[in-house]
Image (cartoon, rainbow, N blue to C red):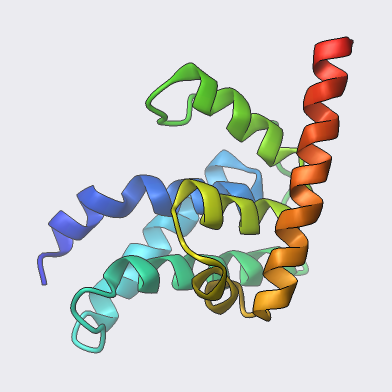
Length: 152
């Protein structure tokens, strides 16, 4: 397993997922470092071909742990550029970032990373039904936000 190749291939996915949970650039950067350190520590136990899913699950779990920490420092508003292919993707991501945490994570994994509902449920540690419910709510909230922005 080539750790550098995995880092190059998945660093943006790990970063965006961490950012969708934490909503703080410094915290997301810390999470990326911790996730890839865990990859180095557990590289012999990861099933070949499942590295992307493993990284997403570890990222989600780590971010949940970070959010639960009692001494969480104050976050800064998102001001740095996030790596996206087009500006429209960045704008939509900002709308997704305004959703509740549970909805943000489900939308990010399903739409941005292409996981199906079963995989998303596994990564988030919830039922498949919970994921479909979160996605439905998120779609309704995003539709309302985008209509409000268009009308406002």
